Image (tube, rainbow, N blue to C red; front, side):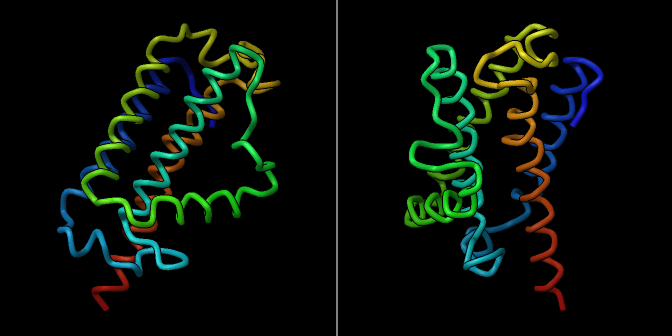
Length: 166
């Protein structure tokens, strides 16, 4: 994803976040815990926990990257093992309370958004500003953890809602 400027990134991030939250507002607890929303029995709590954990990973990458000690995407995993990592995240959070998952997701969204707001335009948009990002701009990772994940969640929930109406 390319962004014209810092404002474009922040506006897009907030727009997708609010679209995702608006969709969640229309669902009751029973719907949010329906295990047929996506994949291997995921419900919306599982999706929120997944998003929270990806937020956490980016926050960790940034913190550890400043020290030069970052393991990406997570300790013990290679990028080619992302499906296994996602499954393990699913299992780790499987029994989390719905309200706790939503609280954690909102908290880590706030931390990521605050991180992005605190960066200069150059730090946010130009590649090579942070050693842990390699040749990428930090927005590559921020957008994947927030914008792309909110769009993913929106699509999966909308698709699920359509199948329930049939």
